[in-house]
Image (cartoon, rainbow, N blue to C red; front, side):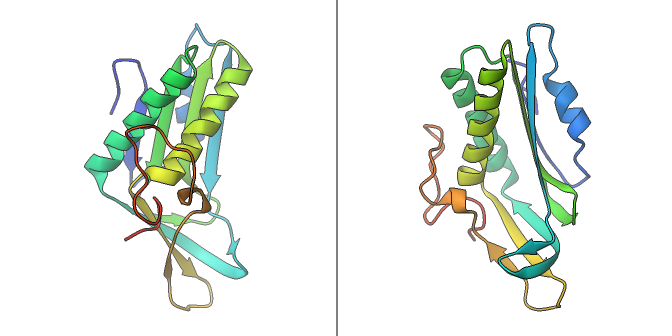
Length: 167
């Protein structure tokens, strides 16, 4: 999904490519590109993680990601382009679950917009994460810390109890 501003919103089951997100925000008006890549780590709260799995209410998630991009533009008027991409389905160790990229004429605005966008995404997007463990123990749905009390874009209300990880 692409907006009239050139922003890119993407939910997909295939692997995410950080180079692709970087190129999605490249623009001759921008002197800075900031990218964030969230990957599956091998341990969470003392348990060895085998993989993650993500589910989403796709239509609502795309609308909320687009609202986050619009709010980023409102907060950071020099922002040139924004890319918000999230993986769905199983995500193995070291693979990207989420990519956020922002471009702006100067680095401060690109950094700040990227930070705002990932924090808002984690707090409000209807995307749920399930952890599977190497010990074969019960998998569990995980609520992100950001979902509790994080600042989110107006019009992008956090769900009761938080954003990601809620069912």
